[in-house]
Length: 204
Image (tube, rainbow, N blue to C red; front, side, top):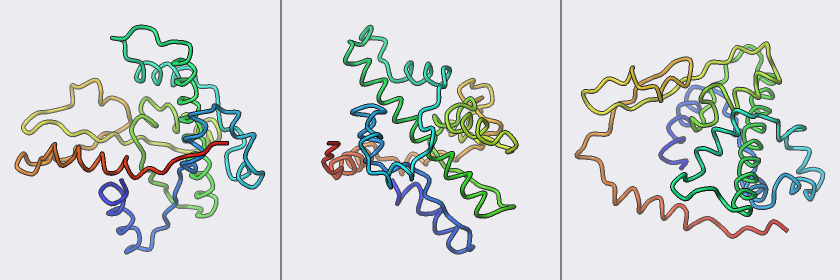
């Protein structure tokens, strides 16, 4: 969702001569790991494998548990063996994303000493200091890492007592979209258009 979510930040950085780093792992590689599992990396040409983290799938028990709980629909009972395999592959793809982002942040700090890095990512990657944050702290314990969690309380409500937002070191409140500008049908249509443009993928 570049145009709505990232372009304003990129344009701000461009106007102020701030370096921008694209930190994601290659989308096709992530999707193929999600389909075939970690062994997919062994099928890549060496130059592609060299561009990925040396240790792309770190062991993170607490993160795994939260991921599985989030992805599993408790109303449908225990997933099948095939469902568990797919879930495990999806989790490994998530670790590949987090590991690659961590590598890119450390590379950026090396290329731009004395800079701060502001990493914009989905909250699941950093909440409870898991995922990306935990990997950064493993690889560079000397780094000072702070997690900023966005919140959007309903108009006129306070969100300080909400335990769901106690997931970072700081939180910042976003103004809710005014009711007259909300259009759920248009939002759903835009999401469908985005997903319909996804190209077919060959992991062989």
